[in-house]
Image (cartoon, rainbow, N blue to C red; front, side, top):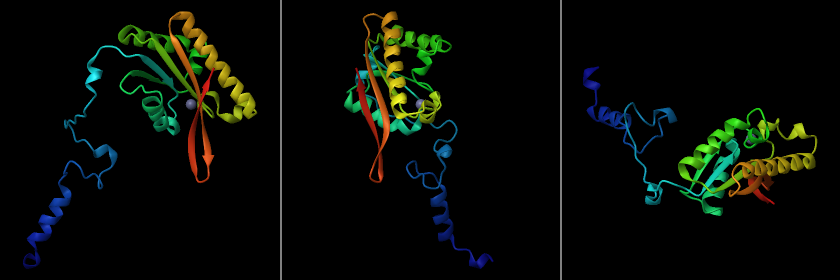
Length: 188
Ligand SMILES: [Zn+2]
């Protein structure tokens, strides 16, 4: 057995076992960082300031997460300039009296700590927080309810913070050929 041992094979095997810091192909996502290892990412120097302009409220739904980031950062131009509350059901929690105080209390922290003067609320269709599209009975009913809730949320926020600017958006998944895209609609 011993005479068949090839040191070169051992070296090659070892090479694939040693983490290189940039090759994660053989690791699950939970293995990306070993215990006590630290990583650092660069941030915009602007973020060293103590305040930001806007607080964004969205649902947690993963289907919209990437599109939301792109919409907020690029379309609205808010990169490095917003707080973000992501909660299941989004502003359903504000419209619903039972959970209203929870969202208001977190909102107040953003106002107090970061002096925000604008809120952007993004609701989405087929939201599990509402029971999904099916719970509305029709597309028109879903649209009307979600738009009404967005406007109610705006009224509630302005009642508490009269100088606050509140922008409302409704997003939905739209099938275009083989692709599914996220469409955003501004609600007046
Ligand atoms: Zn949702």
